[in-house]
Image 1 (cartoon, rainbow, N blue to C red):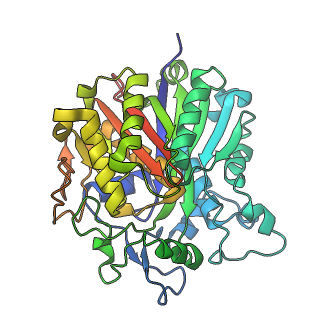
Image 2 (cartoon, rainbow, N blue to C red):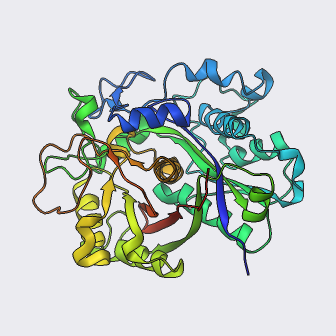
Length: 408
């Protein structure tokens, strides 16, 4: 019988902070990380707001990354490696006790963020900075991991797909420990202009902290965020042997393709519903045990409507009993990193028996009828939680996390 896959470490760097704990405190208290863009002059763009990582990140990362290596990395690569090293350090992961050939790194990376905003790029480092696989390679190099080491690009579902692949490696007895997650930043003029051309972004520039408003009647698009999310997955026998702190069990997942439209989801959330149904079935989960869904919840008209309809379709008359909230209401949409950041938040929710709110939900959309944990956190024991990621290109993912008994 295959062993369970356990989460023994998590970390997040985002606009709300440089650690999991800092992010969690701000999320639980309903604080927005959305501000005016300061990375470059955005005054001529339709959208001038984003969820930027705190300016203190540069100094913070110097504690984890040597100067020589930093010169070969983009700011996003630095976020990823810093988040990983901090997670391993904080959670006392005994790397030296593992067979390096059975340790892997799989990340969801849309691009390396070597954009017009990136500083100090020159002929000597432009290739290294531009390699999207560099983000997983740096982690492997840091710890001497000799197992699988690669990146996945499925747009906004990239790092959720990476988590799924990490689960498979352990289940198939090809690894004992897998570092999974992702990092991203699309806060640059060229990509913001591109999203503006698709009418995808909020232009509520005068109210940055109120701009991301998932499930609200007056939502007008998503807000770009940036950051990194890391989870450490471990074989159950290894984690129990060393008496590890266990955050949750990764019970499984579903990955599907909508094969419908490069940008829009299937009408009424049919593809989203199929993904959640498959995840629930494949993990032998009782629908009545699902207490929380960390929604994709982008703050766009179609996504929020269709995801809500999909949840109603899956859970039927009990749909209103499932708590649903959107981390993007505070963090913005971190694109390739979103799946991992939100998975880490979901795991933390299970661990703390708390659900963060969906902020800015003051004008309810009459079409959306679920319990969105509006504006105020909630104390709630969570037996099972879903983390949804639905991406351009029709890439869908639902991750299933369960409370692990005696996870003290």
